[in-house]
Image 1 (cartoon, rainbow, N blue to C red):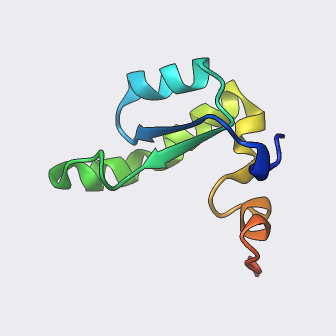
Image 2: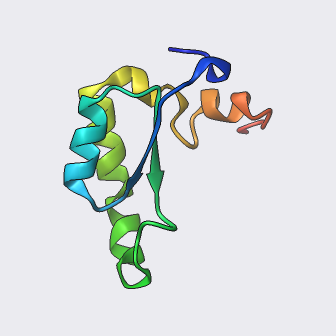
Length: 85
């Protein structure tokens, strides 16, 4: 996994936009940020939250290296200096 300090390509993908997720995975960025805020209409937020785990699973299935800093993972927490316990 590329160290965070060396990341160059970060792709923001609205949760619920399947074609955007597929495109992001295909382009192999350093990180994919699953967006539940700005890119998701207020009326779609509940559905997007329900799809979040599915999007994370798709990323892991297609490119396990991208899952290294998944929100809630120990690596992610450690990278922010947060004790996950």
